[in-house]
Image (cartoon, rainbow, N blue to C red; front, side):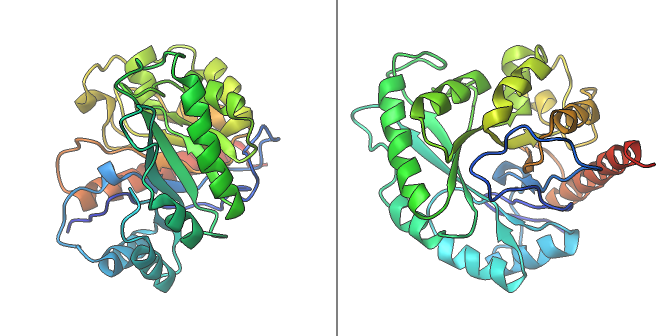
Length: 297
């Protein structure tokens, strides 16, 4: 059996306080409180083409919703989710700083209106050919665009999470934090992507970076990985595989008080999508049980 989707988001544990403008530092609760969702690159190509079929299969596997890519077919996806009692946790959309490109898809305004009140996070990646990754010379333009999107989102009671991606203008979590602070919008926050951090920083300064991001941290992504990996085949593996201590990473997040959503990366994974997602769910449940056991009286 195989599972498909542009992005798949899911939760197997009680959700944290996601309706707040940001997920700031809070006292750690007993046991894990994070929702768990998978990115589009974790879902692959499958025979489950319809949104309805995908929603039913996600429900079967214990997932709680999707987080699709782009602005197409959002009403249809919401209908399928609603029929299964599932949620759209995030929507992956882009911004572009270059003057010869539109700053964002004009359809985004209508999509934001459609998502009003659903607590969907706009997952915003930021591109530029003119400005180098992690430079600051495009910040003025970036802040203008982020504010425009954030103001549209605020009217619909939605939040925006900047998505650090290797090779993009916002490449590091530090870039996301810098632009979040400059944007001066309470509904703008950041994402910590494990694989992109490993690619750029090779596992260094994990806790200091998480502490820096924490006041603005809305989303985190994880996956199995090798600590010394260089290619994506080693930096992104099925959860539970590779030598990087994902449990230790989650334990640090819990210690710091992060209770927001955690997502599953799956770019380039080989093998059956359904089995990969099932194995990742099993690994997540194992981590969750270990974290909960540490809180047992």
